[in-house]
Length: 172
Image (cartoon, rainbow, N blue to C red; front, side, top):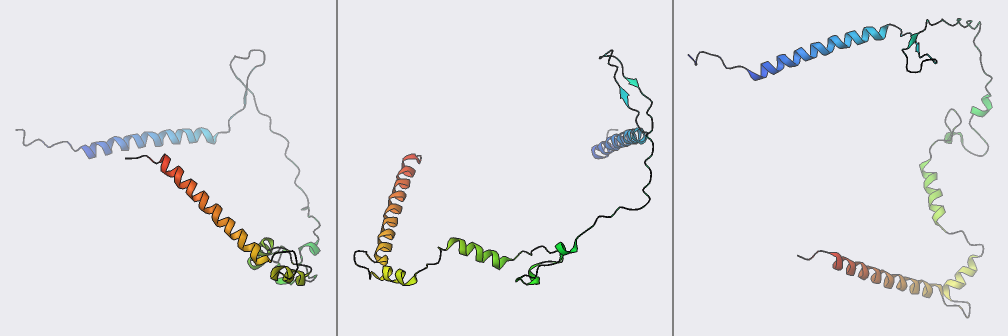
């Protein structure tokens, strides 16, 4: 009867075929590994017959190099490796004499780069800022004019971008 027959298990059949493929691949790997263990002989083509068969050549072993009797050492100046003590503290350098990464010093360099140069005559700067020199407008007035120009330009650019956005935005 049909009920007594067992249905084939597809998963176990697939597992069996995969295991067979794995075994075949492992056998091929072992065979190729055995070929790699033998040192391959160099093969050269004949120059007389460019498309001819390769000719195996018996490799001659080069003469072994004589073993050095003593190791060769290089002269090293330890003065270069020692940390500098000329005005700078030794804690800024590591044991090889290389400057350590100093984050606060980096921050100070970046901050000083963006600051303007220090003035040679701070009194003149105070006169100019307060408007104490006749014929020159005070610096605070100039700052206000520059700030207002910036705001006006900013508003014009934003309006132009908004206009472009409205033109190119697809209407639904």
